[in-house]
Image (cartoon, rainbow, N blue to C red; front, side, top):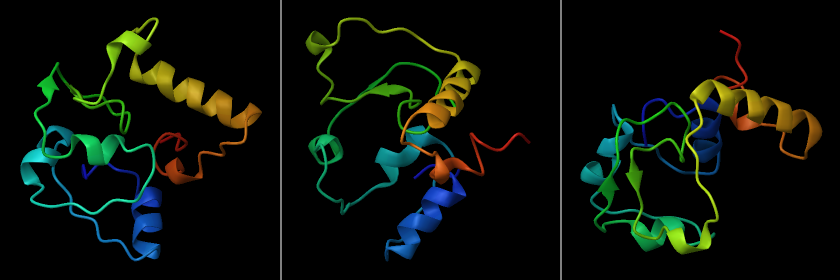
Length: 116
């Protein structure tokens, strides 16, 4: 995972018995991975690991969606509209949503919810 991954998220993975291997840049994750074990979820990760992906530009500081690639599992036909959002607006929106929804953002207390 990128070395910029929140320490809260890393701590949660390690508390559940996982081990984290870090890379300097998010774009290096696939080149670094030789094998992977993952939990069942939407299947997006397991469907795309080891497959070709399209690089589209520079990554942002937003984990997951901020990667500079379009994953092969992405289905553009099911999306009505896409728009680029600056990192600052993403962080501001996350903070607002955490105040009015069930997502506390506790995995990001040292990143997106840290004023420093």
